[in-house]
Length: 479
Ligand code: GAP
Image 1 (cartoon, rainbow, N blue to C red):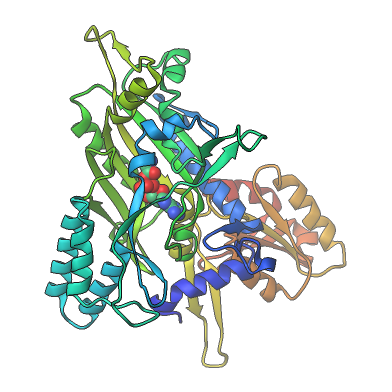
Image 2 (spheres, rainbow, N blue to C red; image 1 turned 30 degrees about the vertical axis):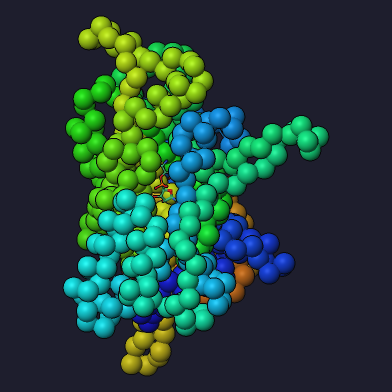
């Protein structure tokens, strides 16, 4: 049975072995912190994406979705503050040349202190770090590292450079002639595509405040310390929603969206103990208040979603830089104003990892007679890549034909998978490992009475049901 420490590694290996997630460009030894989704990973990711999209747009009459371009006018990023402020403090060890994000280095040291039973010392260290980060006190951070004799894990020395800020945006050239080309950025968040379209959507959709604009798309960050699988990537996907409100109502809407987003997580059947809120002490340059929804991954409690009260920062900045009015006329109070914004921002890849962490179970099925075990992914059925596997017991006697007919009847309603190779027990285990909630087996009795065996993934219980009930049984579970 995997312990919590190696469960993470087990999930990474399982993802590769069963076609969920591969290292990008693996045949060239991979590209650090970039990943490709395989056949089942991309299906799982799509299901999570669709679930978020539906719950945000279709289920909220006052939220609409857009799909803005990744490339944006370079002034966007000057106005948004990302050119000047989107950076992390880093420090290099002069002996190993290894670069660390300062907060990660200090947090790792605090973990060691805690494991040594020095919890009070660890807490004090983290509190000092948060305070110094909040003041952008780079010299103070270096002193903190030196005073605590924090060492590089490679060289084992404390020979550090000064702490410096590194901007996380990737830049590239737009235009074909090198000296005429202008430098543009790959967007580091999807949110700005929503802000610059605020008036387009408000006017064409005749939207009345309060209303939201949702978007799902790729974002890019040159994460200096990128590790932990799809938790921290250089190219990733965000699902963001900007909720435009009347100034003065921000505290109430901030609390509303904090609660509403946690409810969304719990609607996936995940236990509330696995979640906690973490209020930010150091706020991003745009935020007036910010809080993370953290999930207990096998690597500990980590941020999966951020709720940010952004005030009128972004719209006002775009108004200043573009010289276009970003105002809304509120007929109820007969006033023009720049709306305030509450943002909900969740990482799709981190949510994939969350769902995998929650679903991954190693079960000991041994009996006194026989040692046995299985790895099963207990996905909520609505998120499972394959909903139904159709497995004829043998390749002859007309059983494959019946199986194919079931496949044809069901495949337009949900994702089905047909397989006739290998012993039935082996096929069940493969479907468990991919997380398929239902398997139906076509056997010789099927020919006599039009019934099949349906096997439930989580309980491994089997029951006999008429063929014409399959669609209804599966559909009921996947809404
Ligand atoms: N628009 C606000 C914003 O981008 P953020 O807290 O920087 O806020 C939001 O990012 C979410 O995006 C995070 O909670 C996380 O789930 C995801 N995310 C951020 N950086 C990531 C990375 N390097 N790899 C994977 N997901 C990331």
